[in-house]
Image (cartoon, rainbow, N blue to C red):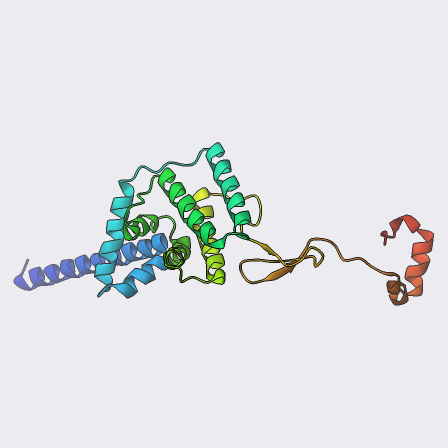
Length: 236
């Protein structure tokens, strides 16, 4: 083999190695994006470089793998779901205390699942590996909880904090609470409406009633059909 051929061969090998390295980096990056979801973009924005951010995310994966996570037993899941239902009812009369109770309940659930509950940033880092979709809610809830402890949070913010806590709570629980799961304020006994913590007002499930005025909108064929088949007509 001539020197020229050797040089060409070496260059080809180096090119193949470079291509393989690019493919590996791209594959790892794609895996991190899929694993961390929106948390990937958040960490990228917070760090000086993409490589530094990805090193941190891989470190989170390593530390997460060292945890001994425990799935909830059915009785534990039912107990937590019932506790949340009680908590949301208390919000109406005591919103400030309820946010603190929500914080404690979520913290207990995090601990029982096997996650550390010491430093908040470490806790978030561990949760980000499997619960990144609801992590933004948890950050927002934690921020309002801290403002609540300083007496700076409004009632609307407290209501939103409970909603945010619920997002991570149901994610960790693995199932929805038995009801809507939100603190609810009733606006009146006879209005048929409730004020939900999302700020939306929804009507009750009671179906609308038809009146005799509907008779004016029926065609002659419909009236004749009703006379011939009276049992097919819905009660009014």
